Length: 95
Image 1 (tube, rainbow, N blue to C red):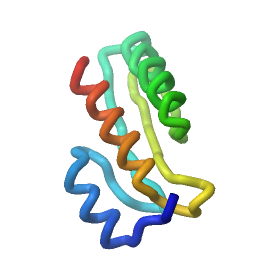
Image 2 (cartoon, one colour):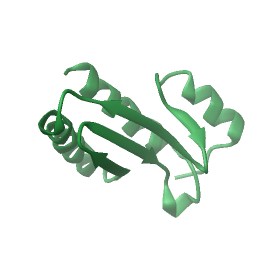
Image 3 (cartoon, one colour):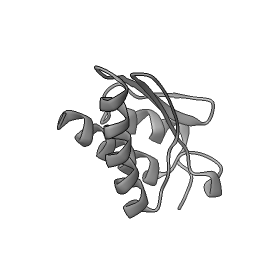
């Protein structure tokens, strides 16, 4: 997978709400009612990430989920990151 240019990244960011670009990755944070809801969404994301063979760098503290996406093999952001970001957004919207 080919690393995207900064211009391509900024254009792609227009298609994903709430994601930001910095530190060579795209990032977002979601807040849920409680830990159980946050962990439930993480589980659904994990299955989709595995299906796409592309895994997020994430952390969860109580009801907050922080996600960073970057393609380590490409040394930056690729189409895979935006595909997974869109999938994550669809999962969240379904909540």
